[in-house]
Amino acid sequence: MRFRRPKNLDYRETVRFHGHDGPFLALGYRLGKFLTKQLKPKGIMGLYITAKLRKQKPYTCLLDGLQCSTFATLGKGNIRVSDVAGELIMINVKAGERVLRCTITERARDICFTAEDLERAARRILRMPIAELWQIQK
Image (cartoon, rainbow, N blue to C red; front, top):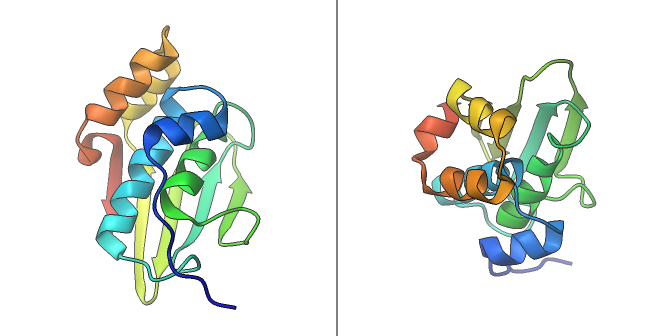
């Protein structure tokens, strides 16, 4: 069975899905919005994402942001997660023959790990240019 690509969730709906606001959620959401705009996936299986990050909170909050903004999901199997040590966060994305490799920037990492107010940090991330959040290689 093939489904048309549904409407993307907005950020408010993403926060509701996740349960609270925060910088890692915003970071994943921003990356997902960028990826869907750049790669233009067709259908709900149009993106395949491999996330390399520490499999613990708050790192994994990023996955909910990605799921809500890309329609790639852990349940459908088009998001896979590899556990890594340290603060490395790397996202590899494939759409057809196109592949992007995304690595969190030092600036984004600093915002996420020094946030005293999670909502304020999330708002800051939502306003920043994607290039200040992610190093993206083709």
